[in-house]
Amino acid sequence: MSPNGEAFSVAGKVAVVTGGYGVLGGDIASALAAAGAKVAILGRRREALDEKTAELRRGGGEAMSLVADVLDEAMLRQARDELQSAWGHVDILINAAGGNVARARNDTTSIFSVPLNAFDEVLRLNLHGTVVPTFVFGEAMAARGTGSIVNISSMAATQALSGVLGYSVAKAGIDNFTRWMAVEMARKHGGRIRVNAIAPGFFVTHQNRAVLLQADGSPTVRAQTIMAKTPMGRFGNPDEIMGAVQWLCSDSASFVTGAVIPIDGGFSAFSGV
Ligand SMILES: NC(=O)c1ccc[n+]([C@@H]2O[C@H](COP(=O)([O-])OP(=O)(O)OC[C@H]3O[C@@H](n4cnc5c(N)ncnc54)[C@H](OP(=O)(O)O)[C@@H]3O)[C@@H](O)[C@H]2O)c1
Image 1 (cartoon, rainbow, N blue to C red):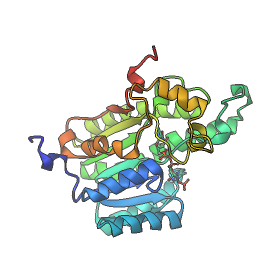
Image 2 (cartoon, rainbow, N blue to C red):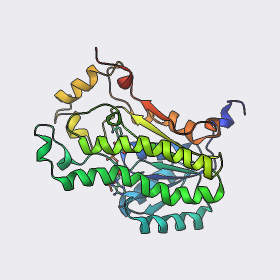
Image 3 (tube, protein in one colour):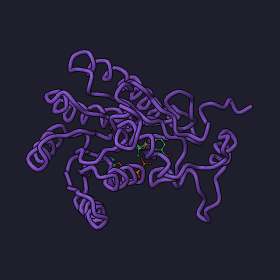
Image 4 (cartoon, helix red, strand yellow):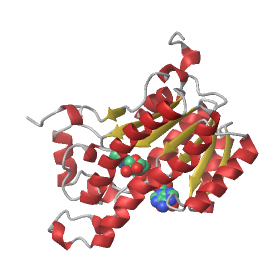
């Protein structure tokens, strides 16, 4: 297939976006809907789901709400059944639920002061919160022999980011899980189910705003350190993620699986020197 507009299209595909009313997940959901995909927003809060779904519909998109916690397998199975009754199948799963957990951080204290249950919480949210939806929706893709899964990794997966051990371990797990599932799907369920990840650099969202920006909007010391190691010298805009996500979900990426794509203004390429 030549890399023309059609090859990059996601029009008519059925997508599930976990964390789809969050900042990055929300932007991905909006962009997929604008590109003609049918988008199911999956999350825990009915009101936030319905608000996002209504926004997508106002923009002319086809959308539905799926109430589920990404750690609750029974709820996810019910969501999958609802989706399949409404739209028949699933083509795309974006695992965008996740983020840091404040009490698991040790920015100014020793790691030994972090309660183990806080470590466990952030690990489970970010790693199991990707694994469980992948098992539930990936199984439906396997039954049909086609699909694309996009996970969200982080700069924390490959370099030590101070203060966020549990999050970093979880995101490193996501990189490994992405490659493992890519191999499993291709070998056991045919070459048309692909599993990839994007690794965003730094974007200001709900879960990190207080860590990156002071009350007056100026950067914190941590944000200044991040900028110094980002060759482009700025935060990313959530809409800068979408090109890579749409490509990974489209037929133009038909031979791409097990990849983790940095979207980071050069952060991961730069030693800082
Ligand atoms: N922002 C960045 O710079 C950055 C960089 C690298 C990676 N990421 C990753 O990008 C992803 C999206 O994060 P974001 O920055 O856009 O944060 P965000 O705006 O806080 O979005 C996170 C979303 O996850 C949902 N969520 C949390 N726990 C959940 C659960 N148990 N079940 C279902 N949904 C749950 C939240 O819903 P509720 O509001 O209901 O909790 C929210 O919709 C995360 O995986 C994050 O680690 C972000």
